[in-house]
Image (cartoon, rainbow, N blue to C red; front, side, top):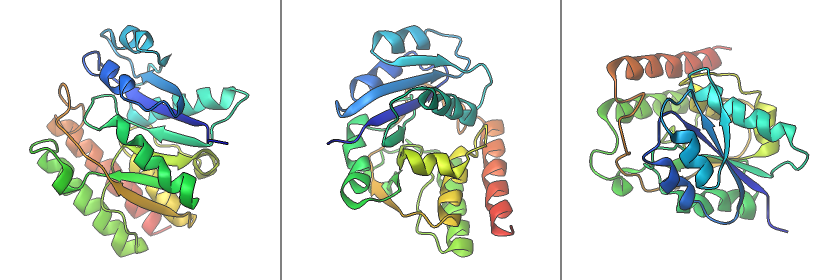
Length: 230
C-alpha cells in the first residue's frame, strides 16, 4: 500500500509562482496544503484554483505557517505517513519530491533534507548570506553533534509520527534548524538528497533584505547554541 503523503507550503505573496509549484507536485501526493501567511495579493485564490487546500495564518512567520499546516493535518481523521515541506517561490523543483521521499519509503529513514548542492544550483539562486549561513550552521552542527548535514534546505520530507514527536515550536526563521537539531538530539535517522535549485520568482522575504538575513542568522545560531549546551 503506497504511503499517504501531504505537502505543506508556507506562502507570503507568491501569486506569481504558487500555481507553478502546485502544478509540478507529483500525483503520489494526496493533498497540497498552502498556508497563506498574511498574504495581501491573490496567492490564496490562485492556489485554490490550482487545486490546493488553502489555509490562512495571520501571524507572519515561516514557523507560524508550518504549524498551521500541521494543526490542519492533526484535525483530520486520516493522517499521512509522510509530510513534505516545500517553499512557494518556485526555487525548488517540486517533481523531485519523489526523490525526497524515496529514502523514507524504501529505507525507513526518518527525515530527508533536499540539499542544494553547488553543482545543481543555478548561478545566483542563493545569496551570499544564505550560502554563508548554511555553511556556518552545518559546520557548528558537525562540531557539536557530529552531524552530516550540508544544508538547511526548506525542501524536506519527514515521517509524520517523527514530526509530531519533535514538538516543533519555532514561529519564524529557526524552523528548519530546529527540526534538524531535534532529529539529532533524539537520534532519528536522516539523510540528504541532492536537489536542483533555481532563482526564485519575486524577492525573498528573508535573504532579500539585510534585516531578514540578520534576523534569520540570529535565530538559527541561537537554536544551535541552545541545543549544544543543554
